[in-house]
Picture 1 (cartoon, rainbow, N blue to C red):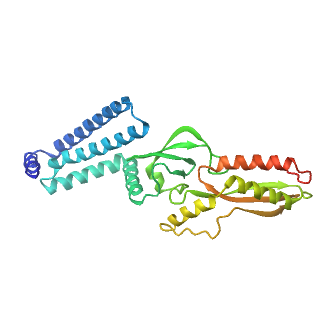
Picture 2 (picture 1 turned 90 degrees about the vertical axis):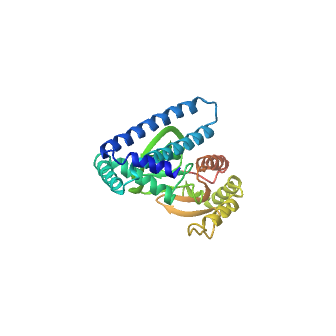
Picture 3 (picture 1 turned 60 degrees about the vertical axis):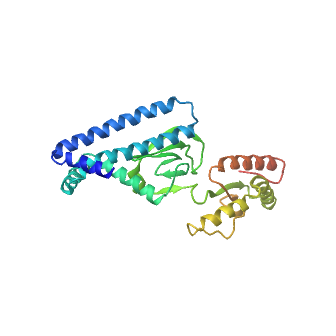
Length: 285
């Protein structure tokens, strides 16, 4: 195999750099078309979504490796040609495709530092969603609804984020190392309400809805603390009491899985409304 590559390299020794460059580009385009055609064939096969994505990725990697193997004999024989090619190619890319080069560098950093991976829920700038794919130039997420909290339901829309953006804005990962988040739910009462009774009712409702989530969170925390210095002394839900203008504010603070806040909030709020409706000495604002 080595002799074959060297012999082929000798044949390209007398070929001009321009011709080598044209051949390289032609090979890239040809393999790109083969890649697209293969993807269409895979799409027509009756595989599950997981299998389809898996085999697409495998073929894509094989295609890229094959491309590198094909261009090695073209440029390997003389280091002068390689350096010239890299110099011209890099300069051309930097001038004409600086965004693409930046996005590719972003892809390299993402894959080396692993700030997130496929399946994580992230917030990048104004975009929030679950990661579907991390490609050479773009990271694809499926959008979730945005409210005053970073939680919501899927909208079904796909958002393509340039990888370079991931290096220039903050990235919030909600599900990677520690897939739990702290959340707060405010309940406001009139000043003449029996706030102690209300507090006990809310705490009982929280216990019923949250169950034994603290133990699960504690186990995840032990794993996460081996990667990041994340330490919580207390994972129990609690209620903070405060007074604002003309009202008493009870703030329920609790921990739950990152993607489960909306359902838990719904259940807790409905249970609170049902219980408070029975109490004559508790009035909400």
